[in-house]
Every structure is written in structure tokens, then in C-alpha cells.
Image (cartoon, rainbow, N blue to C red; front, side, top):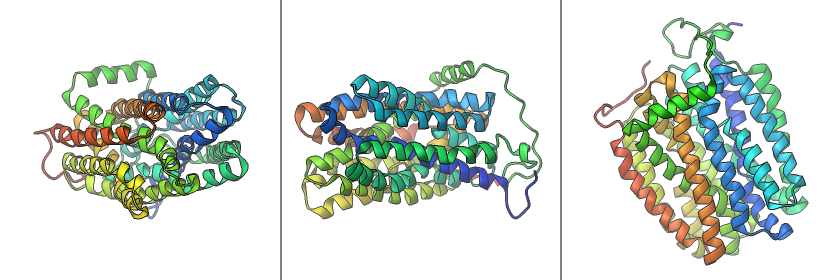
Length: 422
């Protein structure tokens, strides 16, 4: 298959990847809807439910570098297909659970592994393989799929859960994974040479990459070994740890139940989170565009600083007038995952484009370790102290710490302006 000058196959690859990431984002947003119904039906504490969510978040991150190695070993298409199958089976199985360990096993392990195979390492791999031009912008669009997933899924899931029970919401997300599955099988390709083209924006033909004969686990562990010897890796991983703790682990998991604690209906709270998703769609896409043109260290400093300030104000917004919570949603929503495109850019600068999948996979693993710890910590704080104030304030303070750490990443190596090579 060849592509015309008017349309490059890379854009079709980007569309399928976007839909896949959108679906997995919708599936990962489900726990925020399920916490209160599971409390009511089974009598499980919020700390118990948060443990299963934490296992999910942890495996979602830890699978990233191994998934990146499998992209080289068995191909992106097969890996994505396996992931979608695991997600469909896992989410459907949650409707049968009756014990807390069932949720840890099904939602935590099975769904966590399936989602981890389509984590941000997938975005980084697709962008590096298919795009030579506008990499930051494309990464921003793919990253924004998480926000779009919330936008599309959360209000629907909240309505289904409210009117038909939480099991109907689980079946809906499983069905979405099955809808995307054939698109991956028939459209997705592993490399541009498979459709007779080169990367978008490439000056000429590029040689087909050699097939990887290495053990994927060895490749992933070798990347980790290389990373732990690098100061830049620790700075990237540490700042992304804080990113995960302040987004997926805290707001993504606990904002809806926190709103319910303050008398805000669950459906309205889910709508608020979806509204934040709309804003993040613009914020993250803009962040990708900016990372093609400006120093990513300075961008990250602004993002973490503004996020920290918004989280410090969240406890007061929840108990204040209605406009204050809307103001938080706007301020935080524009910044939600805007950190991803510049972090990927800095990872490629530090370790090379050919290694970005595995290395960013490990950096993203630290993101999810932070998310898992924050989900459990916030649930425990709520269980024993009765509210989330301490969790929100602590998260805001560590974001301000991250704003200072990121200024030392690749220091002295990057120029003040870092435009994408044409």
C-alpha cells in the first residue's frame, strides 16, 4: 500500500491510536464512578476500594516499559489487540465480584495490565516511529485522548450507574473496547515501511528497522539499568511521580467522592470532571505545540507551579460558593496532563529517539507509582480523618517542589529554544 502526497498514512495511525487511548482512558476513569455504589452495595470502606485502584494504577505504569519492548518484539498492532481483549474481559468480570480480593485481582491486576499495555509509552512509540515533523503537537493530541475519554465516558457512566446500576457502566466500557478492537486489527501498522512510506515530514526514504530478536523483558530491564545511572532520569522520574500523585491518583480517583462528601450530586461531580477533560484537551494539545517551540524545562516549571496553587485552593473551593469549584475546574483542567509532551521531549533529548519508548515507559512507571500511593493515601486519609483536606494540601505542596526540580533536567544541554527539526 502506498500513500498519496495529500494524505499520509501516519494520520490514520494517529487516529486509531487516539481512539484506543480514548477508550482505555474511559475505562480507567470508571473507579471514580464506582466508589460510592460499591460502598453502598458491599459495605466496603473507601480505603479498601482505593487499594484495588492503587494496584490498577501501579500495574498500569509498570507495564509501560515492557509494553514498549513488546512493540519491538511482536509489533504494536498485536500488543494493542491483546490489551483491548484483556480490558474487555477484565471489566466485564468485575460485574461478578463479591469480595474485596476479587476487585483487587480483576480490576487491579487484569485491567491494570491491559491498560498498561496502551499507556503513554504507546503514544511515545507511535510518534517516534511515524512522525519526524510536529512530534510535540501529535504527542499533545494523543495525550489529550485521556481528557477526551473522560469527556465522553464519565457523564454517560454516571448516568448509567445512577439509573441502571454500576454493572451497566462496566458493560458499557467493555463494549467500547470491543468496538475499537477491529480497527486496530485492520488499520494499525507497526512501521511506515509496511505501507510503503517513511515518517511524516521525513526528507527521504528511511531504511526499514531490523526485527528485534531480543527478549522484551531483558530490553526493558536494560533500559532501567541505563536510567538509574542518569541524573536526568531521576529528575524526570521524580517529577513525573509527583505528576501521577496529583492527577490520576488524587483527582482522577477521589474528586467525585470528595464532591459527594460536600453534598454535590455524583452526576454533577462527574460532569465537572468531564468539563475539566474538555479544558485539558485544549491545554495538552497547546502544550504539545509549545514543546515544539520552547524550552520544555520552563514549560514544566509553569505547569507544576500552577497545578500546585490550584490544589492548595481545592479544599476551600469544595466548601465555598459554586463558582469557586468551577474556577478550580478551569484552572486545574487546562493543566491536567499538559506535562506529558514536554516530558517526552526531554526524555528523547536525554536518551535518544530510538530509546524513547522504553525509557519513557520507566519514567511513566514512576508516574503511576505516585498515582497508586496517592490513591491509597487519600482513601486512608478520608477513612480515618473524615475528609480529604490533608491529601489535597500535601499534593499541592509537592507540585511546587516539582516546579523547582524540573529546571535541572538536561541542564546545560538544551538550548533556550528547541524547535522540532523539519
